[in-house]
Image (cartoon, rainbow, N blue to C red; front, top):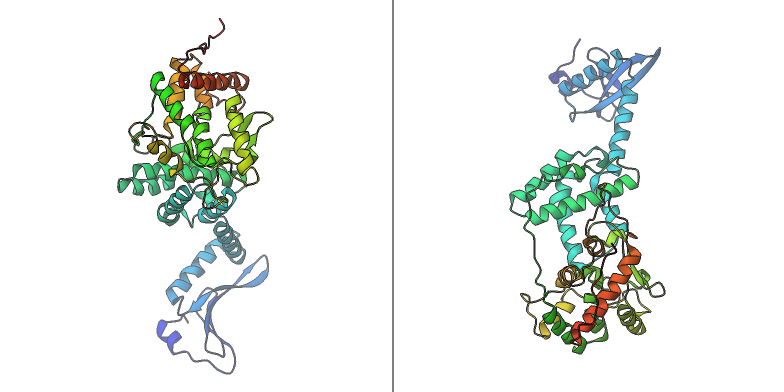
Length: 405
């Protein structure tokens, strides 16, 4: 006789475990201590088995019958319900162990600290925008539309730049998952053009040769701590991004080979970069090595040698020299080099763009590798340093580059 809710509620325990049968193998096991458990008896491959369905009243009679019917459907297809249940639990545990949030946290630990401000911003993006939407999902199962849905919420509050930052961070996490065998591909690659276009931020820069000469003279005459003076003098010579300069480590500097090698994980585009060093740049690094060579950072923070120079260090130096934020920025050294190397020194744009660590592709659409044009870029960087010296000294004795016919 089929069970009813009333019969189950009034069923009392006895001095022995007992069963109340329902239908089609389902029964309620009443333990001596009064606990009530749903079970289903079934046979497969000639063997009798017992499937645990749940605890009453957490699992109601209706829910128990539904679970029984699902198990019978599996049996009709030749599938053992107990084995199926175990495989689902295993898959769930595996998904939890390889969720987006778990992989992201692991990636953060491997990535290490970069900049205080940047790290805080990244943490906010993950915790506020990505983890609520994607955190509990198995990273291998996340598709482009699910990522886009999370990014659309960011766009919806008008934070277009943050949406792009979140997409970039998610892409790095997915690529880490691919590298560690927990995902097949990065779905953010399918989102190209899906977000609103962000406003391009233009950094103030001095690009008129005569004014550049005055700036170089001001830098040459500036008096500050050895770290700030060295960093400020090196900035126009190697024209990397300000964060890359501030966080430069001695292990990335090869004075014998006269070059800096920045690893992919430090770069905005995720590609490693070689920066050839001119004689002038090499001299600056050799001099500051006497002060900071025993530590990690080439330009450490004055308050904590374990941290890099602060974001405001060089900006304040420029302001002290009389250059406002509308006149010149630290990032502006890149635009200065980009313009003058092209317009005044006639170097090929490909060489310049590659040295700026911009995305440069060949005629077949392949990205240039880090050593592309390296010998030519070495000559270009030395010519650039000599040109800046000539502008500072009021000379005009640097011969522009002439491409071979």
